[in-house]
Image (cartoon, rainbow, N blue to C red; front, side, top):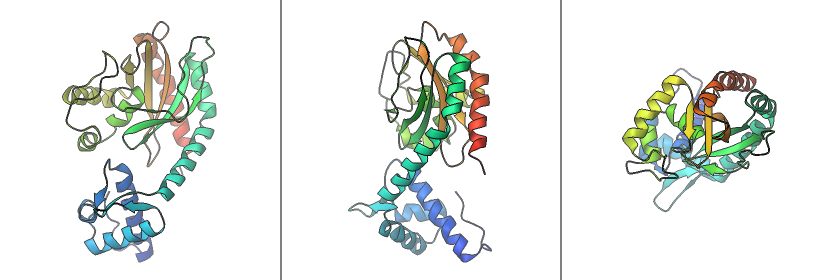
Length: 253
């Protein structure tokens, strides 16, 4: 995030800077202090302190005893409304994904250090994978999470995941940060991610990113490994990418 050009009208500058602060708070895994906000956004410390104070007064930010700031409840309410709207509008795309693949389709959004499912369309099969709307899942062991991680700068990924071993969900989970980093480079290059029984045994999932400004959103299909082989999962990618573009276009502008 960079400060607006100096020739911008003062009122617009203030809006831009306030939104920059909110985006910084939303993307930080831990609360941040005024000095860090000032440094990372190129703001005068007094300006950062004034804007943070205004955000706190309106409930868009909160601060702890150490005067470090995080997103407040007002921002969370807006986020919930945005997720509901996104999930509602994604219905046709998710149903098309089910029709194209025969498997359960999901839409997930990055929230903090987890992905949260905001919409789903179920597979017509009796044996199907179900992830209820509102469920939160890890980043490193899910296809929807790995797609989101692959779009981030390496430093941002490290801040979210930490430097130590990652929790093992199954024997197939990648738990070494260096190995995961190499894997995410491939995910970024190929434009999709596989969860190959890394989150749950017997379940395979493939996900692609949805191009939406300001949000990390993933579109995926999941199925039992007997039906969704690695080849079947990869064959679903072109349809998923087409549908992800349609969903992104419907929310642009």
